[in-house]
Image (cartoon, helix red, strand yellow):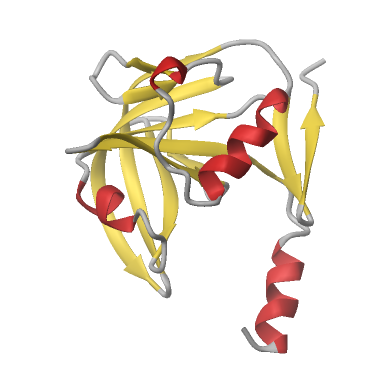
Length: 157
């Protein structure tokens, strides 16, 4: 990565984001990937999107999965975020449960969105995945945020 790209990436890091783990399933079971490029697109119909890097080692699973879940991490989940960011993509069985639509969900997440792929769009070096939200739930708690390469907390009170 050249200096201009590094500088651009640092500037983008000035925007604080929430932290999620997107989960899906392949023939070997559940797989997760830490993602902070998650956003709401529409309330009616309920649509969200997230972006998948072309060089991601787990791209093949998310490129072909027709359903996925977005698990919004709580402030206590920074270790979980790091684990799924580093390539340890297979969650332990005891940290999973099946969602209403059959997609794997992470236990203890602050919010969970079960989605069906509506569209995939290749833009630059990422694929934008748009999902229609079929089921969701949330709970109270502190959220995990990422800002300038560091984790932090955000309290809802």
